[in-house]
Image (tube, rainbow, N blue to C red):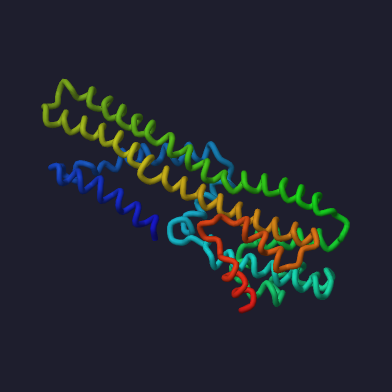
Length: 284
């Protein structure tokens, strides 16, 4: 909801200031200018990116605008499921969690944490490394090196949609200029026959194209891309916390201490406290 509030502030500030300065809102409504700028931006976006990036950028809109899952409850769920799995493996042996990691949807442990199960990639990430650890043939430093390689590529993948949208934001002012130039071309074509009023309207229409391109870039698309980047950074950080937990466990630390390593790896903004994590684990 904060994103919606921000967009409303941009709209109200720009349009409100224009109206209070004596402008007429109808003068800003030029659908063909919007078609030129928006169509060119969307077309360039489709040309520049693979379909997977296009789908990720489009699919991320609801969670970016209407929700933010990377908060304290989500982090407690991540650390909680890791604690329970590691605690079970420590008490009953690594083979005891085989059913949990092979069929997490059927696992009594994972079923307690629907937020984790709903993220199939994160669930697979956890289960894959628990599967590797269960073999018992990989040293902790080798496990950590494997984590680093995968998280590095994963981080690039997570940030790619935000980079793609940023490139669109960078191009929007130029597309606004294209719309303005086309408007001037139309204006020059009627100079011999039009009166001053009509010429003024055509020039104003051309200038609106420049306005729309710049406003869309810096008031909407650019901030949205930045929000996508922030979301990707928080998701990558969550994978780092998972890594810290599992590497600490592979080094022989007890589950309670292993999840503390993971808690410390989380960004401070929404990181649960030591007592909150302890109470959450005990409550489960």
